[in-house]
Length: 483
Image (cartoon, rainbow, N blue to C red; front, top):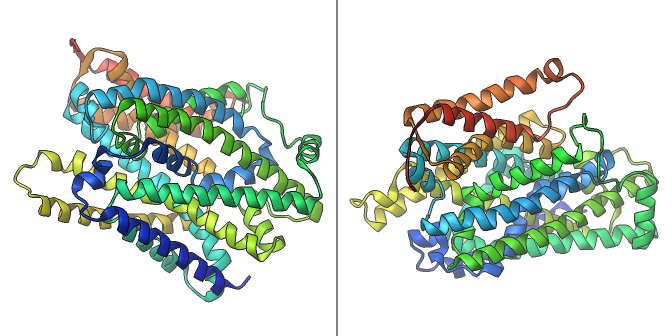
């Protein structure tokens, strides 16, 4: 397909995003940027968060993994469902009761300033690494299908994409993102459905026949019953619960949108709606992955993993579908990057710089500082995208989940200690405990064959990390307090 035509489509799509940003960011203040003036519509937040939760990684890697793992990823989704309920009925009431702008203020209320700052730093590290890994995957595909054929280097592609994201998040922040995420989720899901429909047509199958064909090839297998396998269903379900609690409920980016809703009840409705739609959409992604595997087997194609979706669409489907695929791919890219940069800016300004407590800073000065931080994170994103290009992991979803296990574990342990106990801790020990836990996890993970034989540690590494953090905090506890 003509790369200039694809580039024009990307430009037109971005122009629409800029128009939405202009309409939503007029007269924007710092409160607009950070929490959308606490006036976001819960239905828009719920639908837009589907795109943020899925991202380009799900769009590319989940269908690509079906040929290797079947529908085993759905075991994780069953855990996500339970995790969403925990977030809705345990964490959200906590955040609304304390009227938080940054959710890490809770750690300050409960465990002191060191715990608060440590939690914020771990979020910043976690979200920066996760978001740039997701951004890299989609930028890399856009580079391969459009820009490389025009002679544009990878670093320039990444730079332009980040500049696009900066332009429409610079002023409006959360208020803008609630609307742009809704638009982008619509485009992503529309592209998914259209690609699946055309693949069915090319395979000359209906829905029932396609499911039978997947079943006969072992592609639709969901449950793994071997306890030694890292995809064992019990491990996956438990991991799914804690991944959702950590990566949604303890993540400022995800919760920033939730607490921008006016009331707790509406925010809980948002979370419950998200859980239902999320489950249905992942099933559709897995079904698409099955169709891709059937199609590549029929044609004798060798592409697999993260490369399979783009190879099939761009090599074998009509030009109109290719355009839809590119729009859907970009729509999967932006929600995972725009919200991350906004949330990281918010957390750095509020949690590390203490912007809300600095009465000597007027609104204009605060806005200038916020702009500088926003630009700083964009520059950091560019550097890390280039680092991921150098690493070039064949399955980015596995890498992202492994990074999450190391970086979200201490956050999970901190919040669990604050919620489940009434003890204070010696603040000076908190940062060291939160650094020691992932270091021990790394040592165990690197030597698991020696330690556990045939048993494979998978995503339960997150829970192990959190347990180590919790145990360390318990050893550093102080006298009981009355809450």
